[in-house]
Length: 80
Figure 1 (tube, rainbow, N blue to C red):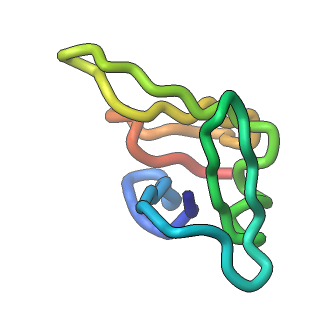
Figure 2 (cartoon, helix red, strand yellow):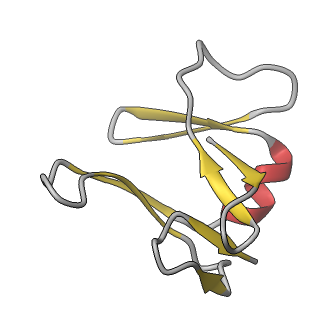
């Protein structure tokens, strides 16, 4: 997981599959799920909740981020 520049509000989440952490990456494991995040992105998502829904309309990953001060109307980007 990473935070990159972009979207309506300036920042957006990026998720890719990786083999594991490299260099100074942070590995977080919960309920058997392993999430790797780089140190810079960790500053933006510290304390966040990552959830997944298989709803037909709004399915996919959802990040509940207490550090976000604003969200765009589509919910795909945020500002901190």
